Image (tube, rainbow, N blue to C red; front, side, top):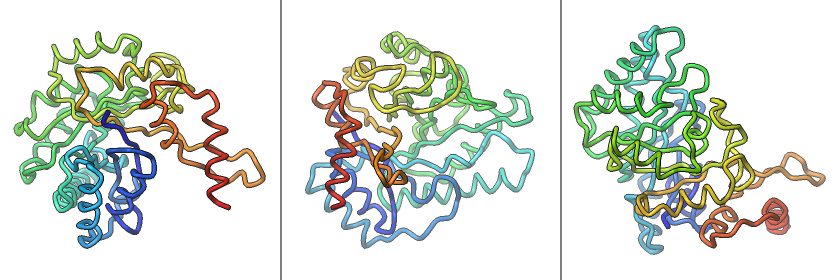
Length: 305
């Protein structure tokens, strides 16, 4: 099972990301090269990057399975403000260069939101921007994330993803990242995941899938809300998610957890704890732990002493 989670990039860059992932018992991970809410970026520390490569090799962690995520404030769908649109294009070109420096092969991207223009025009804006970006890209595959369809989000249907890919010139550098919460919220039945994969294969092709975000959902089916829940604590449920994670058609695809941190119920209510070590263990052991929340708090409270 190739499974990990979102981790911090932080002051130690890729090295810090690798070490955090190993603490969770992961053999892959996903990171942003800076805060996802902005486009401020520091230079890549190549000394720490080289150390990170060594640690990955020592722990049999394949760098080809490591995922970068573009900041979600970048919007390639709307060009009403030409300066912002051009900035998004040039920023992603630079972000790809940063990935290339670290030997990262995949970057997940939210397709964008139309915000005041027709959907058809917005899809064409995404296509134009991606073709411009990929002209200078040699090694990094951009993965369009399947979205929940909240507001004016694009990429919530197979048809929209298919349209974008169809019009990309360098198809060898475009792919898809499935998100289980988003798919549920967009109206795709995750209890019959094989049926969804069959549809995806017919319309797009399974070879385009290079990553899966594994998240339970706080929302009902087809709610178009996009609120992640911890594994087994949402409307999808543990058994549904386990079937997706262990689906043989996607055995070689990295699975990435983006589930919420767990809040402290004791005196320090501001403390929050990452659930990934415990969620990864549950999925590896193929058994739901109904006391997971309590165990997470106990583990990190003891570690802090």
